[in-house]
Image (cartoon, rainbow, N blue to C red; front, side, top):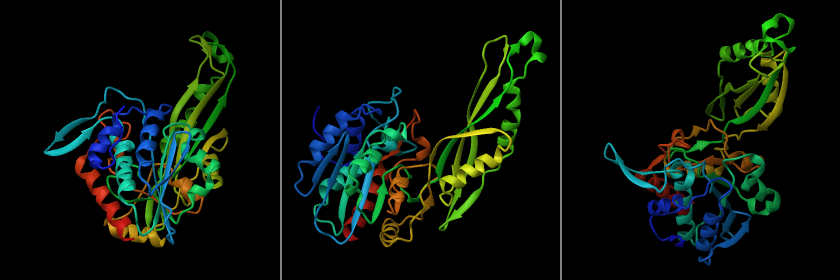
Length: 358
């Protein structure tokens, strides 16, 4: 496999790293290529943890910025290798990973090589297993193995944000709401109790729920409570004795885990509720000095991040963090995943201007 040329354009670099398949669990070839590429630059101190690569400047600056991006993608579906396409006169790179989030990674790689003497120290992180269970997340593993590498005053995650600044993120909770009944032959249904029928009030409460909009530090986060799966049934002629509705709650970063769990339990009062997964969100942190300078430099009005992202990991460590990267988040994981070429260049220019003049 040819090496990555970090002196090439960020657009060419996006194409190159997208064409290195790195579906979650298969990031090693791309991690190898990135490690080899950044190790060629003497101003970077390179560390590897599994398939996570960290490259740091150690210039003794008064402040440090951490900039991170994940290497993995969701499975490919006939959308690689990357293609150049034009839509209504606008140039795009089309293919898996162009949005989520290899265009952002490409910008980071190019600037990591280029910025040898920035006015702030920079820690660049490229990590594995973001698209799967959080227990496998390379950033989380690195925080456990090398917490010293997370030292910083401000963090940027290159998740797709349409080239705009998205502050913080919503939290996410998954709960299972259960009903029970009594099995019986379906020809004699009155002998049993149908657990699936008992789930009707659960679905009614979800249908009636109205998403709340909550302002946090000047940004308005929209919450959501939705059924994402329902399971139950024994056989085609048996009245089911169990049913489970899995619910996903997206909650504003003003709530902690305990408060979010309380909201869900209150909605489903009278039912058995099991919280099976929860990750707190991240407050915007846009009042931090470096955050203010960053927003001013890139010239973007901050918006809230509705989905959960790894900015929450930085926030939990007391580091204010934002999302900033090329690509429309609505096209992440989409079979028509594509990123505007101009947006890749604009994000590169914005980051370069800020990191050069901070």
